[in-house]
Length: 391
Ligand code: NAD
Ligand code: MG
Image (tube, rainbow, N blue to C red; front, side, top):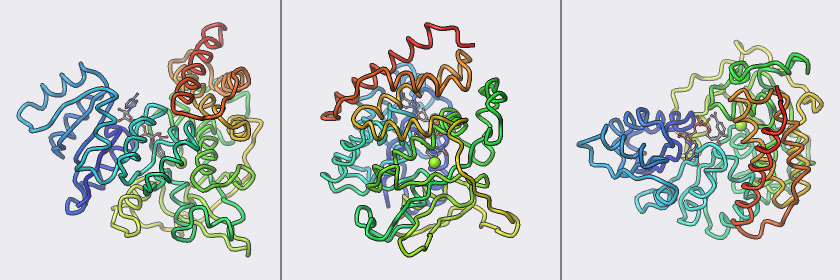
């Protein structure tokens, strides 16, 4: 029986993880869970799964939840310290890191330091803290399993236990991208898109922020950096391939001309279950892939002119140090501004570039350096957004 700490239980990844736990009550037990402010959703989770400890983002949300769950034997907590604490709880074996954005970094690191199996959905924590994150994983000899579907696919396409050593035989990683809802739109058409249009992903159902990132290709940019840290490669060794059907989830290309791909219907329960049971597999209730009805798989090169965020991510990687935390923070703030209709869709990449160019980079020598870079970039981005009438 594996004890699970689910960080971000009320989100899209959180809900899919709960489905897997519910399907396999003999294997998994929800021990701890967190959410930021969705009290009603968390109350349902408490009734259904009866975890030992639950953490909310604020005292008010904690109190409201406790009122709604009277009679249940659960410890209701709140705030950042409690969040880090549940990731290190004695009864937890695996931490599902499924908080949205930079806020996921501290609790994920806490799980790493407590030697839990880390199921990493929260790509922003690895993108921003990079080397420091991977050093902690190595230092504590922790099993880090990528949940992001592309990285999970690459992990499955590499020889087992090959992280690092795989470079001997692998020439390239092929990172697939759906291209998002605006794959074939002109720049002029993209200028006027609404948050509702941008959130409508053709193949995946996801949280708002990652849906916007998928539409702007920043998600692929973050995933490029994520792949570099996870698999010890550089952007030059990763080819992004646009594949609108989202059936091939990514590939490894070997020196002898072999390409190994992982395929499946686009449903996050597959990589989640794989991470939770690796090296075993379990059922997920995802329908089997019917290639005859899929009929066609298409591939094309990404268009960096219409989707400059992908180039920005590569630039940030080569700039090194805090550049990746800077880009990530700029993007989190500009995506939020787009969702609030303060800026247009194309302004996201323009603002991201301005902030990346404006701020100095520093070597990531400590977590404090990462937090400082995140803070300065948020400020700089807000200043740019507030200064000019963008719309
Ligand atoms: P979501 O917006 O649906 O859910 C986010 C969760 O994080 C919620 O439970 C929310 O309460 C919590 N949260 C938000 N802000 C928080 C804060 N400041 N402090 C604490 N908790 C906070 O997001 P999602 O789509 O489930 O994505 C979660 C993470 O997984 C992201 O990093 C995303 O990039 C990654 N991811 C998601 C998918 C997907 O299919 N949804 C796929 C790959 C990777
Ligand atoms: Mg992905």
